[in-house]
Every structure is written in C-alpha cells, then in structure tokens.
Image (tube, rainbow, N blue to C red; front, side):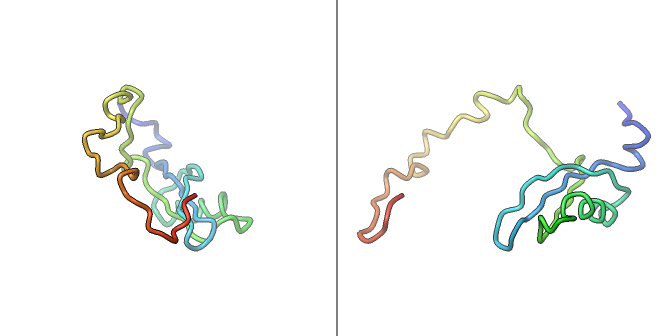
Length: 99
C-alpha cells in the first residue's frame, strides 16, 4: 500500500520531550516534517513553546517497530523460569530503608 502524498513528502515523526535534566524522555506527540531538522523545529514550536521541555528527540515513525494487539499473551508473559529476576530473593542490608 502506498502512503498518501502528504506522508511521502512530509513523513510523520514521533516527538519525545524531556521536562528537566535527568528526567526520562516521554512521548509528546507527532509532527509532519520533510527532514529531522524540520521535525525538531516543528516539535519545538508545538511541544516546547512554553518551556515545557529542555530537550527534544524526533524519530521517524516508520523507524519504530511496535507490538500489535495480537501479541498479547505469551509475548508479554513474565519469565517465571528466571528466578534471579525476582527481587524477593535478595536480602535488604541493614540500614537500607525499604519503601
């Protein structure tokens, strides 16, 4: 299937913003742009115009591989056969406060 003409000329980019230094980037939305620099400018104008972000990432939507609703089930089941992944097997040292 061929994408619509506007998506071929102005592909979709996903925008991730970082609110403060040290915080993780979070998905903020999407923009259409001709290239990465144009996508950053559009993202800045839309998602950071009121100082909501200190850093922006833009990623071509076509480069993202995502799971589908059909992947529910075994794909997301926890690895119960890997006991070392369960923290209850570790003892908390004295003096460490457990939340």
